[in-house]
Length: 262
Ligand SMILES: Nc1ncnc2c1ncn2[C@@H]1O[C@H](COP(=O)(O)OP(=O)(O)OP(=O)(O)O)[C@@H](O)[C@H]1O
Ligand SMILES: [Mg+2]
Image (tube, rainbow, N blue to C red):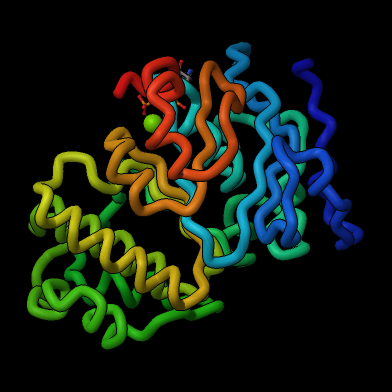
């Protein structure tokens, strides 16, 4: 299973209909279709045939215990190269991300905000935002980002890495929006943040949703993520064990106990 059978050479741009193959029946066509992806770190087989669909402007909570493969799945979708995706397809709005490099996937409208946020040292808040805009496709203006996060506007001349944890998370999200994105992948955005800051970030995720952006939210704080999300996918040892509404997970004690330990 470790052979590479993905054609990265580009080519045709037509999307097979995966809706029948997804984990459950879908009505609207998927905007982001993750189809049977398998990925390895060296010999370690981590992402073991993950499939799910996300609709436009939906918030999907991607949950599971520590080590379940959430970060690896996000990295595979973003075509980071580690883990190496050896099989499967990822389609974003009819574009085959699995045939692209991470840079091309980013240009196609995918933004990954990793857990460590990657604020660039030595640059101010506004320089971090402007750097995201040096190449097209350009998204929100700095002013619009400051309207969404007034704290960033007040601190625009401050070095990004000296911001508080919550402000750095806002900058990381703001910097993603500075590019013209369709899908935002957030890896544990609430980690280490006070509940009032989480409230603020949640509010902005709803505003982003109203603008038509699709979000995949990976969170340890599963209850908060489920209350915000439309749908949930739960991973366990690199496989999908639940795909359905977020509400159902909140109401299903067995499911929460078995896979989320909450
Ligand atoms: N670079 C790596 N090399 C080898 N194995 C890795 C690497 N990164 C992660 N793994 C392994 O892959 C599995 C899934 O890790 P991953 O980080 O995707 O889990 P996660 O669901 O994000 O967990 P957490 O909730 O702790 O962040 C784990 O067993 C982990 O040890
Ligand atoms: Mg993780």
